[in-house]
Amino acid sequence: MKYALSAVFSMLGMILLTPSNARGDGALEAQVKAVFILNAARFVQWPDAAFSSDAAPIVIGVLGDNPITGVLQQAVKGETANNRQLVVKRLSRGQSSAGCHVLLISRSESGRLDGVLKSLDDSSVLTVSEMDQFAQRGGIIGLVMQENNVRFEVNTAAARKAGLNISSRLLSLAKIVK
Image (cartoon, rainbow, N blue to C red; front, top):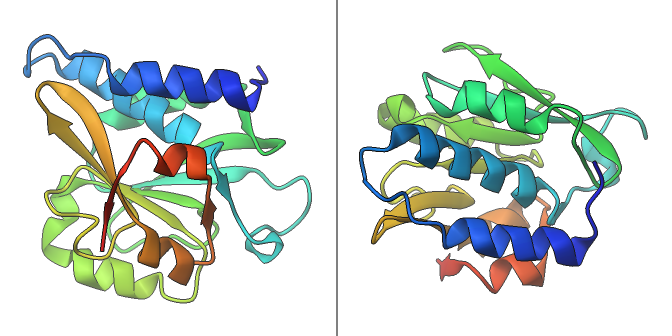
């Protein structure tokens, strides 16, 4: 299903403001975060060299054990971003993230985050995580819970280093970190 940029932007804004009602409502929180990741992909431009062909999909890799994975797989079924299909690929520890355009790094990988981010140097990968201080530690988009709402932080320097162009419309909703 294709969305006009303005419709996606409106939907993203509503999702970010959706209360999870109870912090313990993990299913709703996972849905909100999955839809955020789906829509964030629509607001990012990758360099042409990041794709093997014009028809190559945007691959969302999930590193580590993350409850969002199943919900994310359902959310991207049949969806596109930038005229490319979206697919989810589970990565096991030690498996290369080569070929991924978005990498969701699970909290379980917190102890090895520096190494994971270092391995992505010179690649155009949008990193996303729920880890505390993720964007401040060098990741690109950190998902945070604030007053029972899903919010996000963006490290614009990390995005530039990865060669990614994040829409100003998405950035206007984000907390920018350095």
